[in-house]
Amino acid sequence: MILEYTVFFVFAAIAVIFGIVVIAHRNPVVSALSLVASLFSLAVMYILLEAPFIAALQVIVYAGAIMVLFLFVIMLLNLQKTIEPRTHPIQQFLGWTGSAAFAITITYYLAKGAVILILPSTPFEASARTIGISLFQAYLFPFEMVSILLLAAIVGALVLSQKLRPQVPLEGAEQR
Amino acid sequence: MIPTSWFLVLGAILFSIGVCGVLVRRNGIVMFMSIELMVNAVNLTFIAYARQLHSLHGLIFVFFIMAIAAAEAAVGLAIFIALFRHRDTIDVDEANLMHW
Image 1: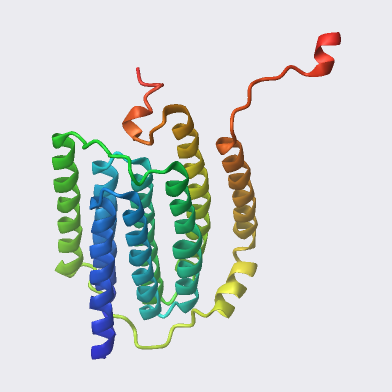
Image 2: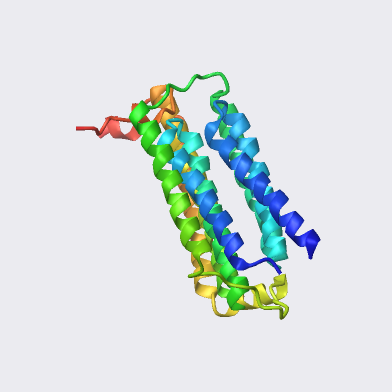
């Protein structure tokens, strides 16, 4: 009981602190690594919520694949040294105060009691088996759509990031 | 058991951090990372409510959100590589070709 609360607070603090480092640090590599730490602590939250399969997916897909893609692009473009010009002070002020006001408001309403919810004590079946059965029966069509979407994303990324070659006229075109 | 609303509050705070990052930064890749932070905050909310309501649908939504976030990251980073080739920067304020 006490252990659960300790784990929650420690990893919630890690998630929030590294989240702030992501947006505050000037070096994009430090931002990316902080985001990895933040995503790891969210995986711990998923384990606390009894969803170990989603936690494993979070570590493998997010902290593994997507963040490696980010780091790869940062190092490919050699962005570690570039100095980012500061945004306009009004924009800075509005961004910080606006998001802080949003956070305080939504936290106030969540804490006020309108949505205070206590977890039921019965166990929750969220293993890979139950998720897989649901995924391949009720959600089969969206699942196939996602595979087509990922294929389209791969093709789109390849087309967008290829080097532009000078246009060479086709050999047959001149003779006609 | 930890109350569900604590997870919701954590998700709200992370979402606000992501909003702040998108509003304040000009580096396109850091803005992208802020978007990932927001997506993860929403995922946390989905799983908290799935646990609360004893429903698997929230978890399956999280599964789809992860797949779509991967596709979005791949295409978005490819766009930034193309932008860097043309402009030698990923400052989003420099991408103003269509600005009237």
